[in-house]
Length: 292
Image (cartoon, rainbow, N blue to C red):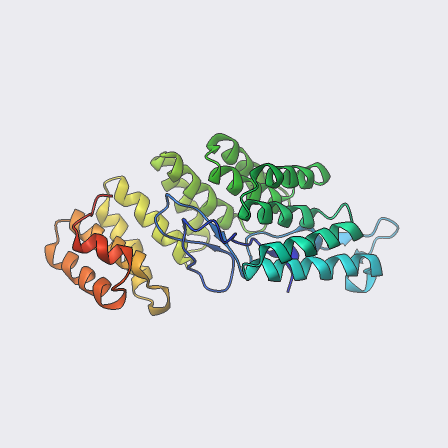
């Protein structure tokens, strides 16, 4: 487990429901919400996981070069990440504090601490942690990305978009599709549907197999009045059993209704009722609340 590569979804950020299973999840629930979820956070890489050049030789620093000091900090941070992924924010915070006590300049520690404080409803402390991480490494792609997402949750959209832009330009950026996904969702929350379409399309072109990107793109296209294009993306998700949830079926029903396809609307609605009878999406279908 590599704590430094975790973009964990604070339990309090539930606007975007968990969707991708294992792996960093920027999920669904319409793009107007927002959450970065956890498990293998392939989207947030930390600097501590990158090979660096030793200051006193031309060799690359690898695990065999790890000092006892660095190893203790890394283990604490891995524990913190694991606890946070399980929703145990207080315990995770304790472990982060221990990691930072060992290494006060651990960028990944401040990055994770920012996410934990955000999940605990402490935005001032969260922002301070992200700022501290950036003071130590101002072009860290993961910190910029996570800080941008945090700012988006605070509805500080312009500031958030600046962070995403910086993350995409960072020399350490290795998975731009995840930052583009976060950026697209944030632009949609801001109401800039055209920009959101552009960002999400760019993310999709880099990773067409990410269902979160496909669903969010379909939502944006529906809002832009392009249901036929939206249909293409949501169908790709609903054709894969493990990706289907109440939100994807509800989106498909809304798209078919916008297309004027009554039979298709009812077909998706019936699947929604049958498979997720207690969901708010099924209730919305039964009450005809298609335009909310």
